[in-house]
Length: 187
Image (cartoon, rainbow, N blue to C red; front, side, top):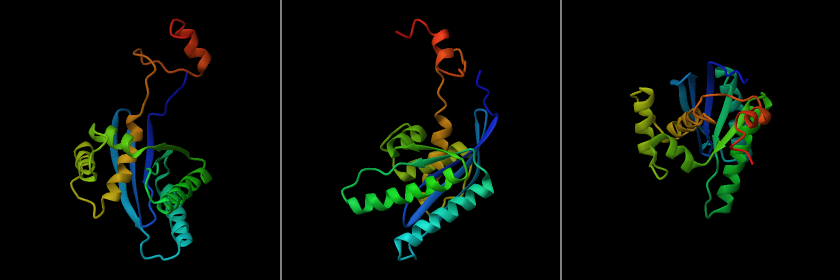
């Protein structure tokens, strides 16, 4: 039987090449506690590769400070400008590489999925997401940039994704154990 950790630290990242947002939460059972959130500004850097280096270094620093169990990251959304998509994909890849270099698992979420899990509406605005996070986590300060709450939303979204395979609350150590308990569901 799979034994789950009672607590886990989840780091969420909203990748960007001008501003990267991040949020870190501590999950204790069904409760979530805010550990930190913020942004990394890179709009003062002209060289794209220097921006990527800054993303990598800051992600590593956050990992070393908060010691997350998992990194949740927002997937780039489809846009009309292919150059913007390419740069955003690179920023995401660099943050993922930083986590993987520290043996931290990575999970990716679509922007619509994140908004849906936080507000119940996949088309919610950044302001609506931020307001719901304030209610959920009990913080009052409004971040200077909504990129911080976007990063926090990714972490909270990941926490909400606990999948229960049946109403019994059982956990399975593998496919064989699941099949054994669910013979009628498997054909």
